[in-house]
Amino acid sequence: MSGPATWANRVRGLVLGLALGDSVGRGVVPASGPIRAGVSTQLAAFTIDGIIRAWIRGEHKGVCHPPSVVWHAYCRWAALQGIQLHKRHQKCIEGEKWPDGWLADVSILRERRGSAPATVKALTGADTQPSSSFGCHALTRALPMAALHRKLTADKLADLARDVAALTHGELHAGHPTAAAVVLAARCLSMATFEEATGLEPDLIRLPHVAWLFGMVHEALGHVRQAPRQKARLAQVAPDATASAALSGGVYVAASYPAPGEAMEALAFAATAPDGDSVAVVAGALLGALHGVDVWPVELISRLELAWVMDTLARDLALQITESPAGDGYGPPKDPFWWDRYPGW
Image (cartoon, rainbow, N blue to C red):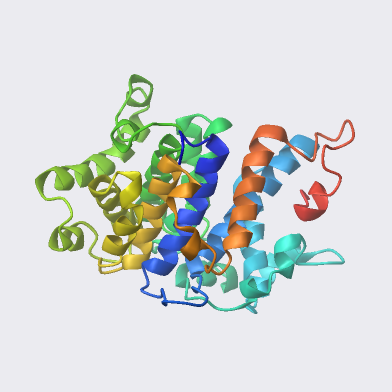
């Protein structure tokens, strides 16, 4: 990069870093040909879709519950995957064309790219309560929500991330790490260094639950100070596929390889963790948010399944947050096709 990345460039870096980490972390990087996407990438795509729709609905209807709109997005993912929704979710699929929106026409989103058991259980089961799962997908799929830091304060952003995680996962052990990861990624989008992004400023210290969440981050940083870039220490920090391990491992990796020129080395190191894809997703998102999209090699991105889809979603997310292309319902929209792409029903 010739200079500091723009905010929109960083949003793209976060989203593509997530997707690349999802693939690199699973060890599926062939020397040539397509690089397969993972299920975290698919779910993150629908998180972005849901967030864009939620903000459009709020601007047009005046009222919106964003977690519910994101839930509808996950229902659309399930429908494309051929997963039979429980009948209590039938209200999500009313209308002449469903699933709607442009993602419904992306063929790769109809293909299985891994399992997301807690999410699928919530979508197919009769139980109205989320599972007690501590699994990492609650966190990995939520990371693009960090871009909402331009709309929400840190505590509100943490609350929203926790609420979206709780749609399908246990609130305490998945929701809290998810909230911390999203707030940290949001800070990476606006800070110059990873050290600065992980610092607790006075405005955050005054928010007790946000400060508590960052305690997990600083515990991981302590491991970096003691033994950076050590596979054995990474395995200790991130021993399994839980949300808390994904956060701790991602922070350990990002802090061990904070320079832009080390980004791919960071993902390769993250892949050595016991659950390498979740750790690499978090590390990729944090480093992409910090340095911008140009930190990721074109040669790899050009071969990455869903790269165009994820980059388009990232651009659209940034555009929705800064320009509201669908307008507010009181005048002509800036983009007359925006509502068709992201129906804010």
